[in-house]
Image 1 (spheres, rainbow, N blue to C red):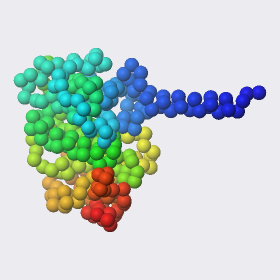
Image 2: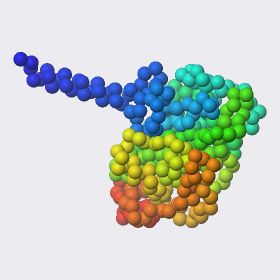
Image 3: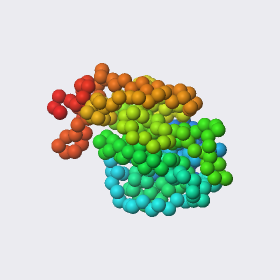
Length: 317
């Protein structure tokens, strides 16, 4: 007769191995869709690097999307950027090189920022793969896009960890640079998910590939809007009831102190050149939702109390 303790041990080992497979599921650089940040896509086409995953679009010679998790710990700068752009060794069809961008008038814009990868020498090296680059107007790359990247890092610190998906909005008949036919996107997007209780929330951004001095809040939209605009299904592993609520809600005070959004006048027009028009100019601030307090405690962590106040603060702040 088999001993109960041995049977229990065998069961626990099996469960542990199964859990490990579900969490990792990476082989030869290809990741199955078992990570919360990964959009809906063919698992065989997803390439995994240490710091991010990527779905590469051969037609446009750049990524459809790049996805990764940014934690508070990963925002600590341990390694400097290398500024050495190289081909992605895992994507043989990525033929972009330095000469494609030379004298083009466009920056090699990071999708997953190098500053988000400074926690690892390997991760920061891989962030300079051309599969992580897209042609960006210099004023955009060094302006609004950079500001959004910096804001995302602040949110990672405030919320401990966030899930990020970012990329160009690709469509037919886009202009190109070089003989490699690298498409020049008109717009870029970024979607962010904070999946930690009690303040689970999401937000999206659609930004034109142009110089702009508008505040970032001007470009904030629902994740649903980004899905309609790009045709990409974000965060498909969320329970359906959560996905529906998170992706249709734009709660500005969940992310920003109300002082930063009170005086903003939204002037942008609906974007219509993507797959579908979106409600980029529909910026209603939800005041009936219970949100996590936007202030920090004495220990430097974000306050965990919930509030319905329009200023985003709990009764103690």
